Length: 363
Image (tube, rainbow, N blue to C red):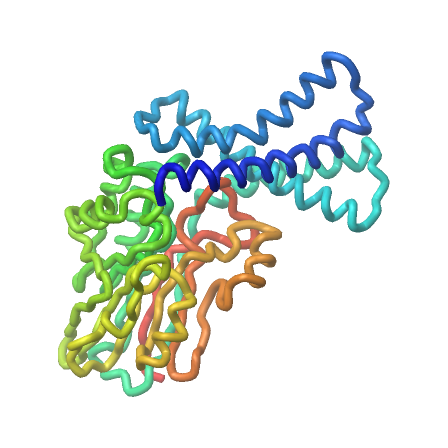
């Protein structure tokens, strides 16, 4: 995406976002009956809340984000979450034709602020999710083989090294056989975020760590990020595969680029030897339809964040065929992670972040 295209999209999104915040402002300020300078200042505050995230997104490409910019990032993306909750809340009150009284406004705003604070706390605490995946004719040597999945870390404005260190420490403590990182590892440029992504190089698994690109790598610098992850010792699978052998058991681990690029599940296993299990790493769950037709046993994906926070965890089902959890597609399993980090608002509500351990067992 060129700088001009990005600015055009940002202008369109920014305009719509401003209108939505004006919609919220009209609900909040009307019962107050303000006039004169107080009214001007109040509307200025509404526009500030609307434009903070836009400013943060534009300055993200400038690099050199010192302490003041970090404060801006947290204020901007927290405001983005609060605004989105208020927009949905007032939309619901209008649908229900509730009277726009000062008491109602106070209740709605207070609830949105509380949910924002709770969501920020929950977003910083990914839970460990353990999933059992039954595989037909699984040999004894692969029974109990454990794949640890991290997805959608989105290391960037509000996710920095301390968070990543904690995730890696937890991942290593689970002693997986293999680590799969299914895309969207960072939101920013390599020079700015190299230090914060570096802990991923500490991940330990006897059969290696593997990465596939997500859509966000292409928003920034896909070549830079794939080279950086390879430098950290993580194998990048770009429509290719590796063979893992444990005893007499053989597992093919394949990976495709994101659907926004030249994703090719068939090319990923071209020339692969006969195996007991074929696993595909694909950022977007939509790849599952092609993967199932090609005879994969298991696909690991992310991308959806499980909706990330209420009510978007319900609305995302309108746009994604698979949102979260384990699904069966005829002879293939698909697991969709809710993501280990978050994107945009630092919130998680009813869509908890996760570090996933998938254990292969005989069907």
